[in-house]
Length: 337
Image 1 (cartoon, rainbow, N blue to C red):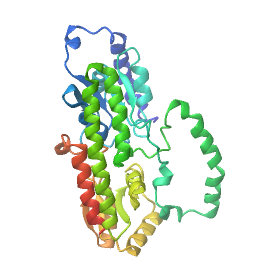
Image 2: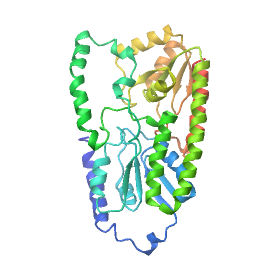
Image 3: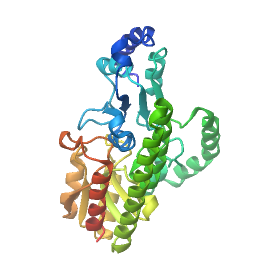
Image 4: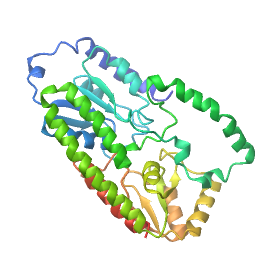
């Protein structure tokens, strides 16, 4: 964070100036026909479009192909956000800048919505596979256990404030059941913002829930039909999906794609991939760590594509949540066969 604060200072200053007069809207803004919504991830934006329909104009702040884990909003974006109505956050670990943005936009009419507030979050350590733990000594395990009580105490202390922004896996939307919870939060926020369209939002939520339930069944069937229960992926984005449907993700990189493995972890991963006779590595279009190609070559695996829905390519910007998640179903069918 020390590196990004200077870069954001000018942006926050610009937004703060705008905040001073943000509540004094002129006739041009009062005549707008759509609610202006900003989102921190593609998944959140896509869900918001499903719920809001034509009543909302949803913009994702992270450019196509950028990494939300390390992205910082530009001065221009902050100025635009200050004119908006809602800013949709996951409320996990993807938006380290969120508190500073909220401080800088005090005095504007922007409301910040934590879409994961009704989701049971997974701790980041819990989503990483045990092959990493095999490299630790017993002393390290003992140290972790000793710190568990303090960890739980910290979690309780932060309960009033919302989710802690450092220890949770942020990829909540990859579980369709969690996506339903996010959709409910977005529906509530939009209904509060535009009460006259509440019935429309609730109707759209019902349709979303039905599609999410169908997607849930498709994932269950894909995993049940597979002969394998391990999925080799480029980074640890699939913990919620794995937990929901009963398979294990074997991530090459950590929760953030920049968290590359040690040589010992790589060796352990290659050994495990061979042990399970894994034939595929699931690559993401927006995340391509070179080490993943090394492992693919080492074990002689083919590549398949999986979508993390954090960010997308330029060509996928108008795709729906269900289209990309449906493609993930097909990827699981192939990779787990």
